[in-house]
Length: 144
Image 1 (tube, rainbow, N blue to C red):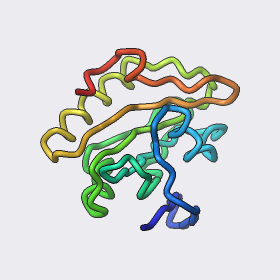
Image 2: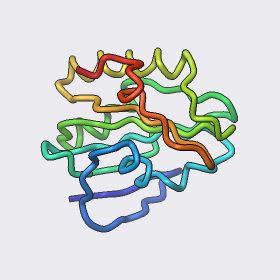
Image 3: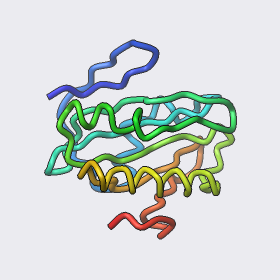
Image 4: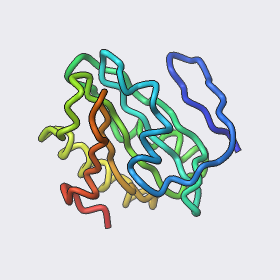
């Protein structure tokens, strides 16, 4: 098992294989991006029992936007044989309210995951001093 966070080519090993059951579980795995001054988009790759295989920052953006493409999001999941993924990104403003673009990209990535047979379980938005926002829990996209 390989569990890393990648940032600009640097690998940060972590220990164990935690199960990702809740948005809080997901947000714990990417705490280092919580207070970033730029948007960071992270993908948690899970096995069939929702155990974390890989956590990877797939793209970095600006203070208020981050370019996200399905190719980048699913690359590691395909390579690592992931059964499911959880999407996670930060809002540098701290406000975890999803934007229209957050909802749009989530729907696009869910559709791509269906084609690849990799379930997108949730999209979690984190920000400094705010509770994580789960698009699944808030019913903002069809994760079935």
